[in-house]
Length: 168
Image (cartoon, rainbow, N blue to C red; front, side, top):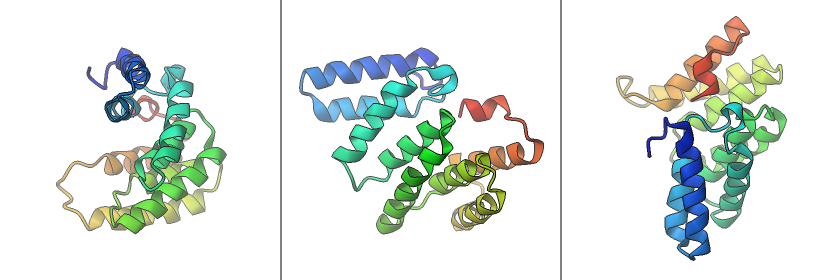
């Protein structure tokens, strides 16, 4: 199922739940992870609440994996719950730091949550950290973090939310 397909979010959700029912836990985690990466998740509320519950469960089940608190924070941001997203995104960054696996994505998301709450100074401070992370990688390499940073900065400058931000 293509993650750009809005129905794909539902397919991964239901398949993951069925795999849990069959006690195929590891396989279900892969389905939920695929669904969490769906670019339509949170846009118009497609499965967002269900995936939020799953992401929170995965964050408790696998507490040292930065992907899950990052997913919770991202979902909360997509749902407009920026204050609630901030602690999860901070935890994701902390876990990335302890694993030496910084990507800049959690920093981009955290900066956006602060900007959406009106703290643009804090957003720029966090985005500068994301820039330094990205500058340490090959600039020619496509990166979700680079796209997010550009999109979030555009939103801050124009005070309008481009459609591609709502569907990243």
